[in-house]
Structures are given as C-alpha cells and as structure tokens.
Image (cartoon, rainbow, N blue to C red; front, side, top):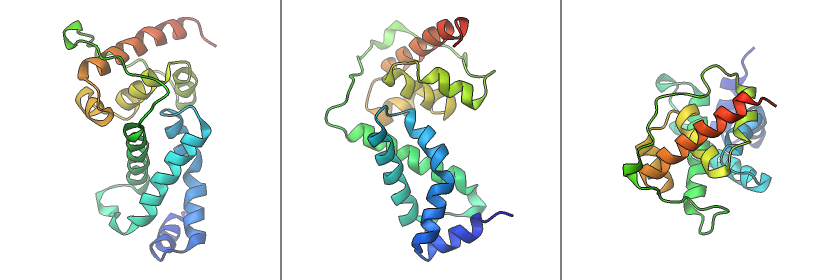
Length: 177
C-alpha cells in the first residue's frame, strides 16, 4: 500500500504531520546523498533541511506527469547542497586550478560493477573535493561542464579530480576493505 500520494496531498495542504512523514520516509537516502558533499553531520543536516524546505515550499510545482516525485525531490536537495557549497565563503578545502591542457579525459566508470552500499564505502575513502566531483559525475550524471559551473571551478580542475578519483579508486579496489 503506497501512502505517498496521501502524504503529498497533506503536504500540499501544509499539514506538519504529512511533512514530517515525507521527511522521515526519505531521510536515509537524502542523508547518503548529502554525505557525498559534506563530512560534518551538521552540514549534511543543513543541506537536507534547506532542500526539504524548498520541497515543502514548492510542492505545488511537482507534476507527476513529468516524472517520479523521488527524482524531483532528490534533484532539489542535491541542488540545495551544491548551492550551500558554492555560497560558502571559507571551505574546508580548496580546489587547485589545473591547466586544461593537462588532459585528464577518460570514459571509464569505476562504479559500474558495484552496488550502492559498496559505492558509498569506497567514496568515503576519497578526499572530500574529489568525492564530491566523482559523485556528481558518475552517480548523478553531471557533465564536466555542468560540474565546473555548479562549483565555480574550471573544467580542467573537474577533469583532474575525476582522474584522481579513478587512480585512487583503482588502488582501493585492488586492496579491498
């Protein structure tokens, strides 16, 4: 029995109980999503909460004919996390700009043979900046250009992080946990 349509109807009426049910239903997957962008639990929760506030505010804009609710909500929360990253004045790391002529292009997907739980275990072993870019490209399907624009960094830097993620993951895959 799928209660989602009933919960969404309650959210459209701005019922707090329905909003809480929706939040709790999707919290685990949204936490895993935001954990790809942030290490600190407070930042993870802030990103989830910012995204869910946008979901609740714009719930009337969701159109079931255009796609699944989960995809719509996931995109909003992911974009909220990206906005939070971009708006930060001081980040815990710096992206080192790489010259585009260094050419780190590959069409390999290091995750194609892994399950969701395995992917998360491997991703957390990468440096934060590399993990973010790797997740956006391989898991969320963003292009190099889209990632560069979203994070306000050069395409060369994105390519370097993708190359770095493949190199590090190759070592990790050869020496499993």
